[in-house]
Image (cartoon, rainbow, N blue to C red; front, side, top):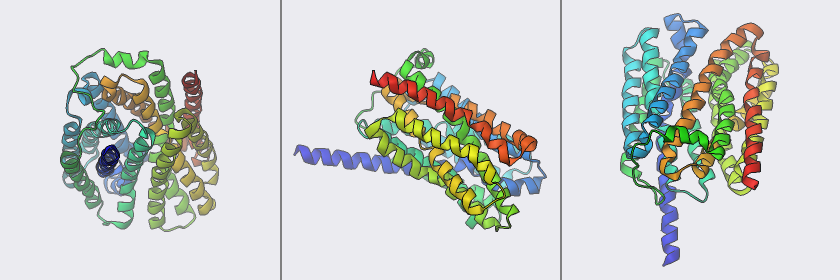
Length: 400
């Protein structure tokens, strides 16, 4: 009887993981839905590269604003987290649809992208908390699968742009359909797991207590170094790949498909890292992933305008490792943090991390203009280096 109950529990948590990961995948297409068609928008609206970058930066800033507000108000711990997820996904879908069908200038476009980022702050951290309520053992793998789904979701607009309509507005609108389906999935097929605690009272001091916990603090420092690299890579590697393959005479379809595959490789990286981390330790896996991705961001520029095969091979390795450690930082926070306010701790972690991404994303076009693609990505290497130092210290703390 006991074995049957345990089997049913495993099946239930597997179903919760599949449903939540599917919802995150569908909703996160909103993130790069416009970035994937940025070349078409820039041509139609006559935008330069710096202005086009704001279509992505606005989402990052909106996400920072949304997570900051959410953390200050303890929203993922005060509200029913799946309701927060569903409402955020639906509002994000509506805002994205408005962009697709009604916007014809950059000012309103940036404003709507900002609001989209605010909405996504109610999707990603709550999704992690839902998974944490279902898993204690195997949490690293479970979060790795979730972040892998997020990675595929963010990569999917590049695939849609490669094989979809020649009308960019239709491609952007498709992300709204996915986000709406995500809300339905969470409302109908997801509920809190057996390790969920009751909704907590509002406590403003939780915002500061996140930084007083040394284990959480070191995990956050590793995450911040990781984020310096990650979104600048996700934003600008497709641009570099387009330019490099274009210089070698490759068809545009190859560049869009390659961009999807390079970012999408991160999904496999997240799952593999999660499997290993649950066995040998999260700091070790995160440190190794950052060492490999840091080496790739130094090497990738020297392959620009050279052999497409060599460029895409290194880019795929970079894509697989640059996000492979992401889930492990979150898992460390769930293990070291106050279990009553995990949602607040995860939300604050992502808030600061995404604020850091706005700097590195904005820095890249400046560096490309100054030194070219050959050397620009090297500026991302200090992020994983500092992250490795934090993971070494966290590993030593866990051992002691």
